[in-house]
Length: 113
View 1: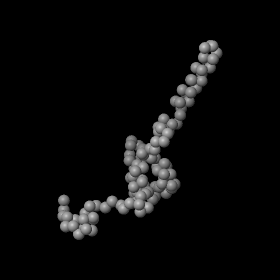
View 2: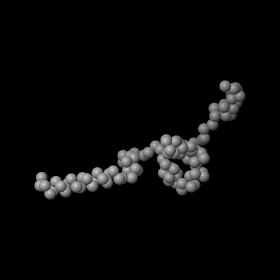
View 3: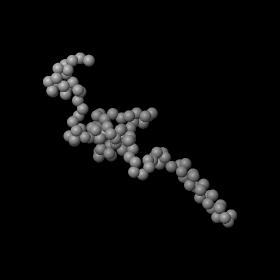
View 4: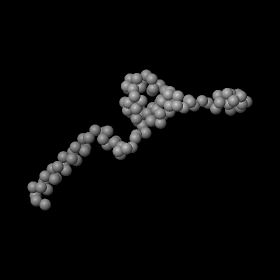
């Protein structure tokens, strides 16, 4: 390989390495194409629910608790889905077994454990 061409390749490779070192943190945490993250930031969780982060804070966050990992608070997409399903009437909210037994007239509903 001619000396000039090799020098050009070395310089270009150095630029690429330097650029990779200065990429934002989000690029290094990027998932493979087609993979959906399980945990979402507040902004991503709000966007997932179709609301602003402020609306998320007032109307959703009190009902769906975040998972704390270090200083970060992240929302589980499955917990968001469950809350949204309950709110939209797709599934009935979970109730204590005692309530189900009482509804059926079962004596075990009043038994203490």
